[in-house]
Length: 460
Ligand SMILES: [Zn+2]
Image (cartoon, rainbow, N blue to C red; front, top):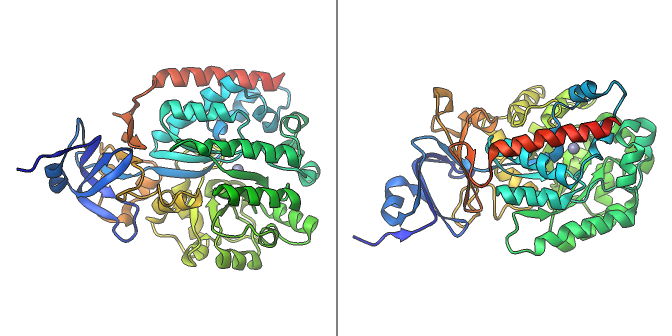
């Protein structure tokens, strides 16, 4: 008998959904992991004959899938999800969300991001793109590294012209926020460059990318500098775009063309750009998107909550049909339960008369998401040679089990199935639904204390 090769992890007896559209499913499947990457994937019996591991994981017939990726989260907001209620409890005075955002410091961001990471891991997410609103980016990175989770971070509030917010949404940009995030091109570029230095590390878990706040809050000059920086560094460029009808109209009025047309003119409409929201777009905007293929991060919960406008029917099913790469984000969890974007995307898509397939949210949160954060070669599918970011679910009742068809994955992509094991970059970070590297109860305890501190400071 041939000698078995010793490897880091061997997962067996899984109902594997690979995230690869061409070969989506392996019955009684196994995955061999070594050196941080997927070494082999296939039949349990075949792989058990070839490999041996001190960390042998028997999935027991449960679903195994690539770690999901949320491509638009304001990280600290996950831990502030009950914000409006908490503020009222602390103070009767009016405190805006913007004023809460600026009350973070290293200690609070570390605690809140660690708690956010736990919440995401428990729902099958192994990576997320922070939407450019964390001030203490080093604390953000170290919290994720301590837990073993993957993330992307950029400079906070990249803007240099907030005149539309001042006139139409003053609550978004209080004096305190502008003190910490000045509307100044040189400051923004310097901060962006600093975040990109993270990428010089060998295989960093937390990488930097280029993010502007968007929605008409950057001049042509800042936008052009940011795009150049992204192209030079080989990372994606991202900003909020077309969240609501009003923002699109204001930007069009200010610059004489829509935000999408402006990005096109500035050379940013291509596959290395990912635009967040895009709920509101003109016919011309949609044509430009189909032609030039920027990625779209769709946040359907927030679209349903705030942005559905008679003039803006849901265009996503049509765009997906036309091969535009759409991924999902929860945006803020103030009103939207983490992990429910998949469900919301199907419901919102139905309003267009062209309901998406039940499997689509799974792809939007795996393969499409990896492409939209600029990591399609490394993440998003269970494929030989890719980074080993793998989730093994639990199967505690009948609704947690697979039906051998990708079309039945709504429960999975909407985080309804408990998570048992999580491997990220080939390392075990969760087992039995509990973190392996840090004390989960302590993470929660610290986060609750820090949340209280942040809210108290905002109220004074
Ligand atoms: Zn956002």
